[in-house]
Image 1: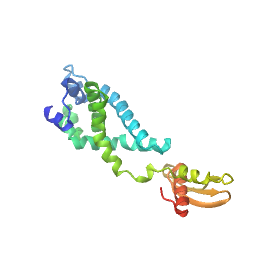
Image 2: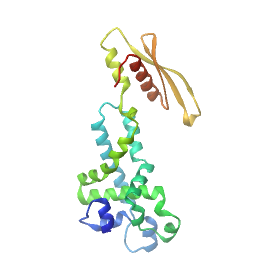
Image 3: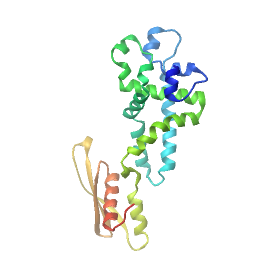
Image 4: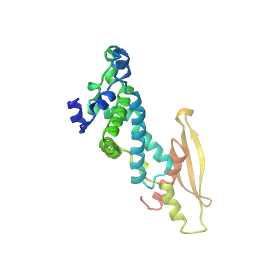
Length: 226
């Protein structure tokens, strides 16, 4: 436990919280020694994680529309990201698993690692408060944000609208030119019009994304970079 606390950079006032966070249901059910599984902590940790990440990206990326914020948050708190964070901590080594789960490779199972990360976060939150929880989360989130495609941080539609609004008789509209691909992986193509003239086209996995790319092309053709 002390070794894992060093990896966390946090020393628990109540070590039982950390023990609880590291206890998988397979171990709790198998031993029946009064130690609860980490499932309740995982529930709390999921909410704490969402609040911390939402608060940060809301404040830091003020120009991103709600839909893009939702996508960004989802990419940061998805199972793939969380199990990656757990592997950085070598969290699997410290889990208490039932014998069958352990032999079956549970220490490397993505779902178990992701859930355990949330449980440990909840334990830190309960033991040390929100600021300690925030510090723990942000050590993983900030490097992830640095690797995120810059396109997600830019609102080309708003930038284009602000430029066009300088001339009251001009108006910008977006039309769907077409879509392709299967239902689960569609690509949308959108045109942006200045009055009746096409000034940009864009493609994306959603209509909103395609509109952003069309606005970006329009700005580029105007010689404007944001």
